[in-house]
Image 1 (cartoon, helix red, strand yellow):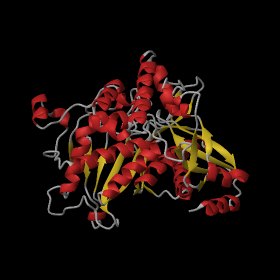
Image 2 (tube, rainbow, N blue to C red):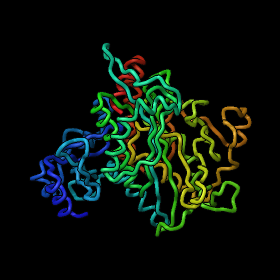
Image 3 (cartoon, one colour):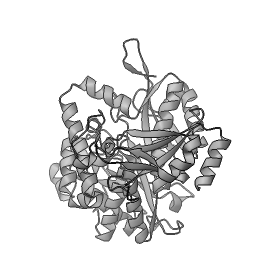
Image 4 (spheres, rainbow, N blue to C red):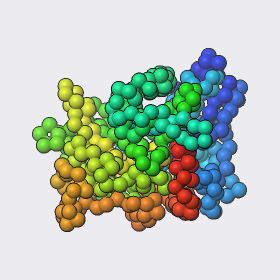
Length: 450
């Protein structure tokens, strides 16, 4: 769409306010709004934003990044193709934004611009990418003591939980479809009040935008039903954690041939697919600082938790970090994909998708191979067996993950200096802040923020 299309659609829909959204280094969705009367001029000139917002952690504690202080400005520049009228918020529309410097160039600390740079890398290699997030979330109510309580105590995949969640889930699906997001599968998950609703894959940039829309939609619709929806990785200490698994497939430039598909291979995975998986696995200890981005993430990222605590890959292995998903009968080539399980919704989706794909492309460039697929829970292997197969335990804390990220020169180069420094400073500050508090403080703030 162009500017005229957006303004016309906004006026025809009776929109009065338009949200200009971005995601910060703490994984928080933030933004500013413009009145529809000024939409055209704001699309031309953007909305001013202090660079300091990218130095804020999830507790709104500003970190001392010299380029992100009280001096200076960037502009929130909306993507016309991202315009959506919100079905759950009357007279409001939303657009996703890049952060542009005053010299009219993408700001080097802009996560959405970073993802675009990775997409260009793939395109230069003749590759287009399809991806989607597979989100789990928890539905709760607030009791008389101000505590979050799951809406049910039903079992995994239970029809009882389906009945309890039916009204809000139907409204969530309708709201997603109204924004051009196609729901695919839904079911109650293992945790009390936990649900999973998958959506169809799209191009990489739209997949990141859709993750923002998805989080916003689920929370807003749940609120209309008197509930609180949380995407926190571990909303309750003794319940199953919420993942946001990333599904991805590589295609040729025209989007007609699935580059992961090889019907002659034992796993039906091509050489390119193996290389891509190898790149992710090689860089995964640092990558999880971006895909499992919160202090709370590491309550979930544990062995025997179905959350992939080791750098393993295998066919339909839900304890492996990279799962080769089995294809659907009659639609084998199109449905061939892999899944990164070491991922949750505390991540900035632009950084997470960009860093994951960049790591995979590095595997292709270097012709790496991930070794033999693991067809058992890697936690059941001995330490020597894991060592022989190159399988390592992922970081057990956010601090360890950030250390691994900074030690991986590939990521520091790929992210660039300012984005690396600001991101790691924010994450180290979050680790320090939550380390000084008790579990109740941690769960409360993660439950509400994500």
